[in-house]
Amino acid sequence: MFREVSISNDIISVKFYRNEEIECACDFLMDKDAQGYTDLSDLDLTSCHFKGDVISKVSFLSSNLQHVTFECKEIGDCNFTTATVDNVIFKCRRLHNVIFIKASGEYVDFSQSILDTVDFSRSQLTHSNFRECQIRNSKFNNCYLYASHFTRAEFLSDKEISFIKSNLTAVVFDHVRISTGNFKDSVTQRMVLSIDYSDIFGNEYLDGYINNIIKMMIHCQMIQRIEIRSGSKIGDAIKNS
Image (cartoon, rainbow, N blue to C red; front, side, top):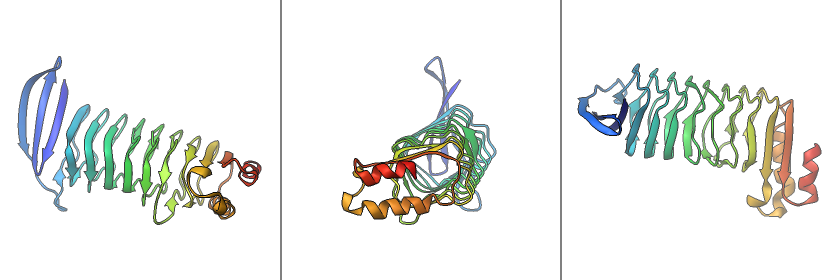
């Protein structure tokens, strides 16, 4: 049975579908937690489809969200701490001020979303998809991101993006835009980093940019490949550094 869920303040509306037809519909008045969030903690929400304009101030603490889809313009001020997020799809334009601390799952899809002030610290999100995301002021410290993809992601933070002590084995940062970050004490076996520099700045800044990349990766070992593609001799030289 397919469940479509919408949230309005503290009212949860659920439509139950069978064979693509509505079998029943219910409204639930939900409690607020101590922080004033709509409390959907410790629930089995498997295969729910959350729809709406904005999903705001909802706590999914320790809930089972396997095979859940979030289809909305924005998710803001929500808490997914210790939630199970296998095969969750975020069809959202923007996630803002969202917490995924100690969340765990594989094949999580954030592709083409704006991730603004999102905390993934200590999460385990393997084989996950961050393709074409715009990532701002977010943290990936102590994460296990095995075989995840950041293809064509843009890291646009005011502060450096932090992957401190994260396991980035076989993670692909392909054609990314990134100028500064902290990979200290991270595991980077078979990690791939390639950057299309010409899409970011003018070539007059190339020397300084390459120096930043070298400083950023100074604590990393066992990287499979680093490339900066700019069409210039300086850009090509970094491939063998």
